[in-house]
Amino acid sequence: MSGDGRDDGRDDLSAWPRRAVDWHILLREEDDDPEVVKHFEMWRAADPARDAEWRQVVRTMGLLRAIPDDALPVAVPTMRTYRSRRWRRRLPGIGLSALASVAAAAVAILIGPEMMVRWQADYATGRQETRTLELADGSRAVLAPESAVALDFLDGHRHVRLLKGEALFTVRHDAARPFSVLAGRLTVTDVGTVFDVRLGGGHEATVAVREGRVSVQESGLREPPVFLDAGQAATLHGIHLATQAVDPDEVGSWSTGIFVAHDLPVAEIAAALQAYVPRGRLFVYGAKLRGERVTGTYPLNEPDQAFETMARGQKAHVMHVTPWLAVMSR
Image (cartoon, rainbow, N blue to C red; front, top):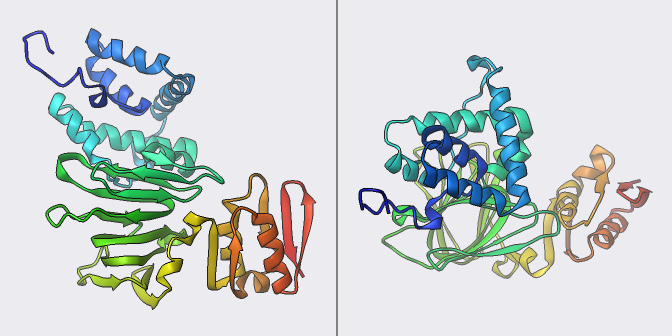
């Protein structure tokens, strides 16, 4: 409750920032507001990791002053627009969008793309970690290891941005509020379904449908959407969308601890297994071996054994150079 008796929403803890960069923006404008300062100190003191995050933001913003404006890249827009809308209601006319863009650019330059993903994400998983999210609309998302998503469920929206990795979605259908997933340049819109979305390198993205139907569209084009039913998949390579048939029972099989490969390169399977290795790296030596295509089923709870099994199938062997490096070669 504000001093003039109006309810400004500040008694609702969810209305306050959750990340250090947002506190930095808010405190720049309201550092003389004791209510803001009090909640900031409460947020910071609740977890040592938050204090470390705050110190990193302060350091980043200090270094930013030394970077010429023309050296800053254009920030990639994210689906975290609910945050700027929230603060814009409270802080009209402060140019929050510009501040947020500069902050995002600074993070990208100074602490790298991996940390940038973490800053944009609402939820992220590490190596060997899967996570089930119960979303605000009753839908569900299961994140694969080393994956990250940003959510926008404000003002009736149902948008998810897959920032990294892979996720299996079980959507509660609502014709009045479409559920959409943005993965790179691929936009997937639910028509009542269970589907899996994977973001690869070079803006490659794949969607596969287990149940129901989705529409798929390349975000930058005006081409009509492509509809996929259960047992169908589509992969976006650049601006080319290729469809194929899949076994619906195998869609999202990683969520049950099984990786199913159909005519995939050895290197791609090794990369999938890598996310389940507790420590160290799996490496495939030789361009020819890396590109050989394999079909098989591999247990994700034993990724090292799966790597060995794949090697035997390709008449290769695995050498453990150190406890942290396993190399497949011929």
